[in-house]
Structure formats: structure tokens, C-alpha cells
Image 1 (cartoon, rainbow, N blue to C red):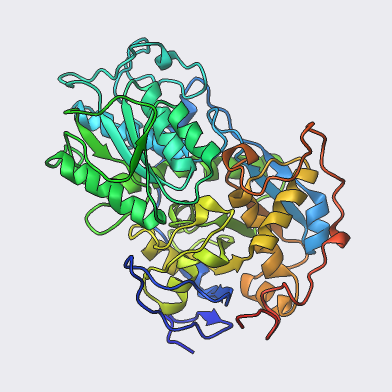
Image 2: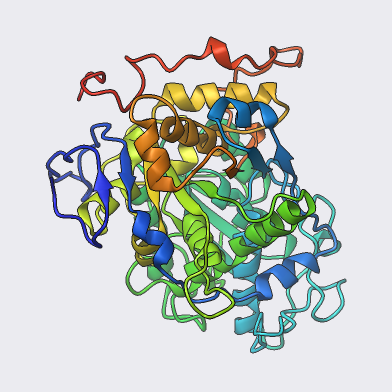
Amino acid sequence: MNKISPSGAVSTQTPPPVTAHKDGGRRPLAPAAWYARPAARRWTAPPAPAAAHAFHAALPDYAPTPLVELPTLAAELGVGRVFVKDESERFGLPAFKALGASWALHRVLAERGGGAAGGAGGAAGPAVEGVGAGEPAGLGPDPAGARAGATVGPAGAAGPVTFVTATDGNHGRAVARVARLLGQRAHVFVSRGVHPTAVAAIEGEGARVTRVAGPYDLAVREAARAAEDAGGAAATGDTAATGEAGSGADTGGGPDPGASPTVLVQDSGRPGYERIPGWIVEGYATLFAEVDAQLAAAGAGAPDLVAVPVGVGSLAQAAVTHYRAPGPDGGAGAGPALLAVEPEVAACVLESLRRGERVSIATGDTAMAGLNCGTPSSLAWPALRAGLDAAVAVSEEQGARAVRDLAALGVSSGPCGAASLAGVRAALTGEGAADRRAALGLGPEATLVLLSTEGTAANPHGQDTTDPHGQAPAAYEPETHPHEPDTHPYGPGTHPEA
């Protein structure tokens, strides 16, 4: 058993040796799929700023996304109540990412104009032509700031900004959408494996797209190189300004950035680049504030477990920051268990947790394209290491089943969003489930919240939940999907690589 730090961690299987990869990563993981650290609930995180929630709530097209209770899943999982946070439509986009992108671009543009954005009181940001000073522009299909020629108007701003980012799907489209609606430009580097329909959607937002013939980590490096080659440091400290660069195949969308100011807006932190990713994480806090209010309205109180799909870990960082905030007495609160869920072929957070250090891995092909990340965010990693109770990796089959079953229950969930259900099933059922439940502190009356981070429209991979004529999927029948011993990840010797 490898030494795990911090202490108190439990791993059910010795990890394979990590070998060098030609792209600077590591070889794919064998599916040793469970990690737990019950001591996480005794850790306290610094409180998160509240300004982003106030910013989002002030947008003219803001509305909380649904929190759907599914008693059928509660019965299947042997718990009291199960709720799914349905992010299939957020500001007119089919995923939660616009929360982070809108707040980050707001902060960048406000700083470039010399104004404050989002201090303790939610100070006004940059004005948008046609919108009152300090009033945020809408982000839906026809917001006030989307009229032709709308431009951000802080004093002294010289032309539109080009926002550069890498994506494996939803983040890139969110940046492109917000940039377009604020009269700015976007240049999006798209990693291998992103569905062509998702790429077309990014181009449809007016973005310039560069396709990268490699995994997400390579797309991140290409985007950063393009921003760095553009010129010197911008006002935000973490970014680069002026010009264009990059490699790969450029297609579609926006005008050539030319000499426009250029800002890297990435949702993955790395040493020396953590300020803007931090703003993106702050933006995600709105989701958890909504969950709190919705659970209270449902008479459910605080959750006992929250399941979070994980790519680089920024959403999970937001979950840790929210639920590990100090209690009323200033000490550790009695927060829920936090479960990170990743694809077996891209379980970089799971591997990092088991080794006690942030590591990179090579990734394989997965329908969970938005989770296909090989390196945890450097900004997120300290919070994940200290504040996550458990991590689990799920197979493609488990993920596809979760997509089908959520569709049958009326929830539009793409492969990334449905991963939370797949992960909870893997953790709470099958051989060894009693020990895993004990590690998570779950009893028969527990309340679970599953974050479904995208709808089916976000990611067409593996969509088979409706026929071509739009008929509803078959009724949900959990007994028709048994946990077979040759597919469940916890049975000893049952996986071909075990």
C-alpha cells in the first residue's frame, strides 16, 4: 500500500506504477476505483465570497435551475431522499459552466476598465451599451447586451478583448457565449474527442476554434501558449495581452483577434496562473447557494452526501469551499460527505488523492468528454486533498446506464452529468458497500444530492435515450440493471485488469 497523505485515507487497491508519457502525462489507470478519507469532515475551508451569487441573481434572465427529487432512486439506493440538481439549462446553455465564465469575464473586464467588480458588497462592474451602469447584461438567447455592436464600456478600453481558453466541451462554449454577449471575442482550443456537434455549437457562438490533435491537457498548453505569444502581462496579473498565436486547425466563427488585447480564461489553475480560475470557482458557488435554498424549501435540511462529477476539480473545489466553511462557532461544521466521480480512463483526482500529491495521467476515450482531464487544477488540489471524503471512478457502461435511467425519470442528463448517479451507485451498492457507506457516514434516512452538470444537448456522445421521433424512453426499471459481478468495480478479481 502506498503511503497516503494526509493521514486517515483508505484505498482498496494498491495503485499501479506511474510511467512517463510522451505528452508529459502518465499512463492510463487500471480501474482501482475507490478512495476514502473520513477525516475530511473535520477540515475547515476559508469562507467563499458571496458576490458572485448576487451578480448572477441580478442578471435579467437568471433563475435557479431545478432540484428534482427522485424517490425511485432513493428506494434503489437504500436512503431517505435523493435530489438531482438539473443543470441542463443555465442561462440558455445546456450546462452549469456559464456561472463561472460570466463571473470571471465580468471581473476581467471590470479590472481592465479600472472599476471594482464583486467586492464584499458586490460592487458594480463594467457597463454594457444598452444596459444601465453596473447592471449586468443578460446571458440568455436575447439579452439586453446582445444587440449588434454592443460593447463593454469601461473608460479607456481600446477595442474588444479576445478571451482565449481550452475546453473539452462546455467551458469553451460558455466563454464564447458570454464574450459574444458582452461584445468581445473568443478563441477556443478544443481537445480531441469533443463531439463535432459540440464544436459546432462553440463556433455558433461566434468563436474562433482551434482543434487540437491531442487530449485536454495538450489543449490547455496550446491555449496558454497562444495567450503568452500574444504579448505582455495584462491588468489581471495572470494573463497575457495583444496579438494571436497557436497551432492546430483553425475554423469558423469570430474575426481574427489581430492586435486586440488577449486574456487567457482557463478553468484549470497551474502555478503562476490561479487568479482567473479562482474567479471561475467563485462563480460556481451560486449553484450550491441554490441547493441550500431548494433543500430548505423541500423540508430536507442539509444534505448528507453530495456527488460531484470531476474533471480538473474546479466544481469540486467550489463544493468543498461551500460545505467545509466554518460553522456558527467558527469551528468545523457538520457538513455532508463529498464524493468525487470520474471516468475510469481519466481519474486524475482519484490517483492524486491515493498518492497524496498532484499528479498527471494519460487519458483514454470516454463519452464523459467534459471529465476527460489528466491533471487536477493546482488551485483546486489543496482543497480536494483536504476536503473530499471519497472519490470513485466509473466505467463507460455505468455512465451510459445512468444517462438512460435519468432520462426515464424525466431528467435530461449528458454523460458527465449522469456520472454522479453512476458514482453513487458504485459507492453504495455491490460487494463492500457496507464499508463504503460507513466511510461516508450514511444511514437509511440520508439525503443525497447528485449534481447533473450538463443536459443531453451539451454532449451528444452515447445518446440513445429517445428514438428519432422523440418518443419518451422506457419506464425506469432498476431491477433490469443488476450489478453483475463481472462489471462491478469492487469485486476482487472481476475486472480484466484487476
